[in-house]
Length: 221
Image 1: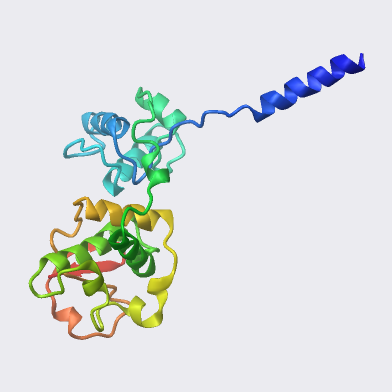
Image 2 (image 1 turned 135 degrees about the vertical axis):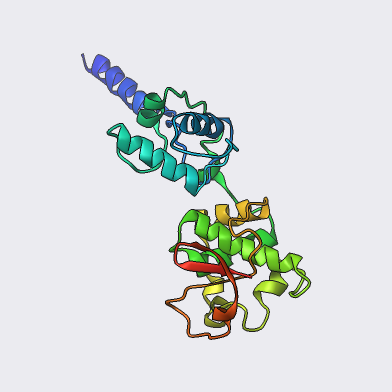
């Protein structure tokens, strides 16, 4: 009797320790075939315009949230099992793990991630990518230093360098945002400056031509 109980206990323990596959979830920062499939559905149903590019950005998140509200689902803007089922999409995992697994790939990526975290961690994902894109646009401009470190540490360029916030460890969102910018996503359309009109008394920056507004930041040339 005691032996049978011991075997049952060991079997239950083994079952509890068996790895369980986590359900795929698509969210801002994900990429791949699953994202493309979701985007095609959203475009077909009129929740989203443009091309299905396989990148889960702010536009896709908003479209997913609208679909969720329409269908009585929790409108968190993420595609988990319930939302995928409502869409008729099977999540294979191709693209679902990118958001969680983004890692530092170079010294430039690390520095850019720190800048994004220091300057824009309270902004939307698109807003964080936009801040990183401004740095890269400056690198490409003849009016600024031609390296990421040169742009970031240019005297007076970023307040986070002066107050030391540039040294803080970036979170995974900032790391992904910096990588998306490095991979070519520029939500600003080539802007060289950004500022929060409620947080600056710099008269000069307000003379720049604003091209777009993303979150709390105005992006200008």
